[in-house]
Length: 393
Image 1: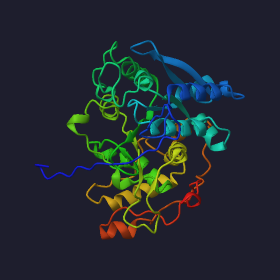
Image 2 (image 1 turned 180 degrees about the vertical axis):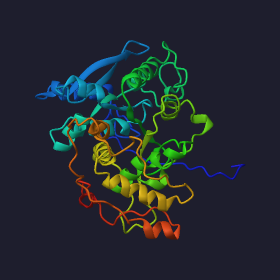
Image 3 (image 1 turned 30 degrees about the vertical axis):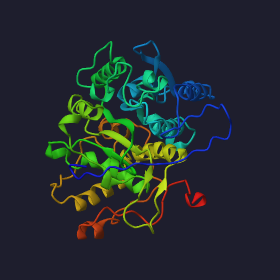
Image 4 (image 1 turned 135 degrees about the horizontal axis):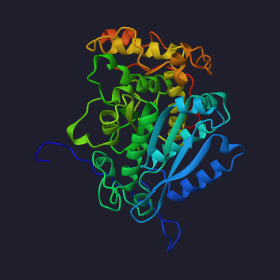
């Protein structure tokens, strides 16, 4: 081109086996509003589901479709415990064409509503507000990025219109009301990325010295848990063109330091420069769902009262980012305190505690890499990752 920027064209040939057939070409693995409805109906029909998950309608859309809202926690806890419980807000599918976000959301919900001890710990210590599909109209009508108003809903968070952007207006009101009564530990909006490889996050770098590096801990824990997730691809700068995006408004307006966009490549991963670690592959549905499960695991690591993996991550991040001044012994409630345990400890109250993480500390993994100034290292094996990929290569 005139600016010397390369553009590429993909050419392929399809052979249709049946005459007069109707065929659809998908950019990524499809996930419809009907798929979501069937999954939620099955989820709510499980034995004892009413003890930990409730579904309501966040709002109706521009053309009257329902936008589901899930509240997930241990509802059998004492009222005072429920009142003190911190919140985690997760949303997905604001961009209809990014179908992988829905598969990650389903993996997240499967873990969170499962019968494992670790899922119960999450429900005992947090209240989750989950909007699985923020743009039902766009999904139903085959939009790629916009709603039926013709606007990108993820650029309307600063001043959403109640009529034209009802789902954004309503989730913003939900976060505002939550903040009145409880802390919000994490906000995350799940997306797909059409150009970059790997899975990664966008966050927001705090200007407060007491919070520097803290916004990087959660992505870094994901990086240590999975070879699919790349810390090198994460970005924590706030661009002017993104000031009305979900993560930026949640961070700036509602003062949620751990405010993220989780991105999954619609293609696959390149996993760094060393193909011996793991060769590039195209992500499949199980990969996307696995990231949803690992998201839950990272929450447990982040808020483990033992602070083992939290402190290990902070130590490695200090090695990776020597330009960011280390904060002496953080104690701001942004990790290592399930259900406000440190606050109630002074009152002599008891609470459920996470007894250790199932993964060992990763301290020292990056020390040599950080010292040499090279890119973030990955472990040679997928420690703690349930899925074995060698079978399908």
